Amino acid sequence: MDVVIFIVVGLVVLLAAGLLVGVSMRGRPAPPAGPPTIRRGGLGTRVRSILRGAPGDEEWAALEESLVGADAGTVAAREIVGRVRHRWEPGADPEQLLIEELVKMFDGDPPLDLPPDLAVVMVVGVNGTGKTTTIGKLAKRLAGEGRSVAVAASDTFRAGATEQLGTWAERAGAHFVAQARGADPGAVAHDAVQAARARGHDALIVDTAGRIHTKQPLMEELRKVKRVLTKAAEKDPDEVLLVVDATTGQNGIAQARTFLEAVEVTGIALTKLDGAARGGVVLAIRKELGVPVKLVGTGESIEDLRPFDPETFARSLMRD
Ligand code: GDP
Image (cartoon, rainbow, N blue to C red; front, side, top):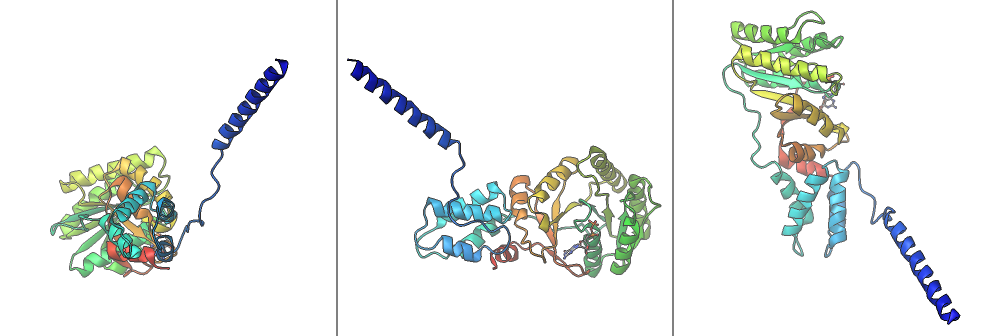
């Protein structure tokens, strides 16, 4: 009898130990599955190799991971892969399917569309993203379309900001409105609208401060500039463009969120697409924040600004 009790107790102890090991293993991260994701660079080769033959759950998951690795964000990546998977059939061209689904993410997005009378464009963004350069390029582009352009320096905080913007305005052949450093940004914005009206300009681009974007006072300042512009022009700004640096990856989303909370951003100007970054972050911005991309910066010279073209973007994301 004692022997039987001994055996039963022994079995129970063994079983409990087994269960404990099982539970503790479950908490551990799974070993890495499949090849590592590509943080930067083209998706084309990877897509072709993942979707060779008959892709299963693992392959589709790897494709999703690749998109996340290209800065698309998890929500957009999941949606895109879901759509590609739905359309997939043996013999399909995986790259082409992916390009088509990437392009669809931007279906119906409005381009930069300014009214013929005084068009007011407010430009916001963190310092260093390329705000000044983009304003210069946009002024040049609008002037090239036959508009008479004025540029206003409402970033009165940053040392050298006014001078730098003045140089770009001159290059673009735009009229420049500025006040002394430390002046009230709202006052500059107000004067700029008055000056633009008085001088008969039909486009006004207003720069704003971009420092300490996570701190409340700057966001309040932006709200105030927008209010002043709305009052002076008797309408909301026609565009509030947020400048996002493509090389900042997912950080661009955090930035966009902060600015969106302060002012109603109507479009993104994505800069530095000529560098290593392919701008996958716009998929995340588009999907998670619902803001259309309107312009892309492709270099440091005044001509390097283009309307955003989803097809070109999708193809460049694929390129190796
Ligand atoms: P701000 O601080 O946001 O006004 O940024 P700037 O306009 O001064 O630009 C910061 C740096 O980014 C400068 O060296 C610009 O030449 C550079 N930059 C801006 N746009 C682009 C772009 O589209 N491509 C590249 N390669 N550089 C850019």
